[in-house]
Image (cartoon, rainbow, N blue to C red; front, side):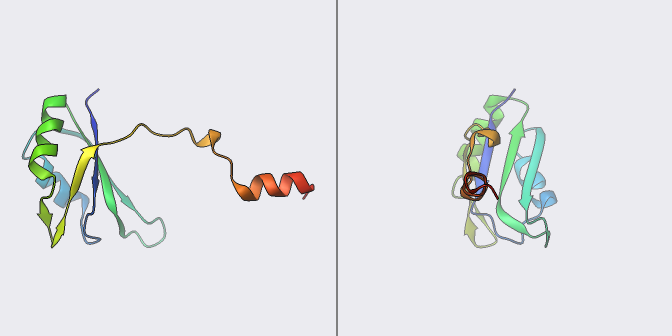
Length: 101
C-alpha cells in the first residue's frame, strides 16, 4: 500500500474533481477523499490522497507543498495513522455513566 497523504489548507471552494485533476499530474491516484461537512456538503479545507506507489506520493509532496490553489498555499505531507476511535473517552459519556444517568 502506498503512502497516504494529508492535503491541508485547501480553499473551501475546492472540489474532488479539481484535486483529482491536479494530483493526477504526478501519478495514478488510488483514492482521493475530500472531507466535507455532512450537513452543508462544503469542503472542510482538507483531503486525503493515496497513489499507487510511494515514489508518486513523494513526488506529490515535493510538487504540491506550498502550491497555491485559489489563493491558499496547500500543505501536503504524509498522513499520520488513523486513531482507534474506541480508545477515546468522551467527557459526556463517562460523566453520565458515573452518575447513573
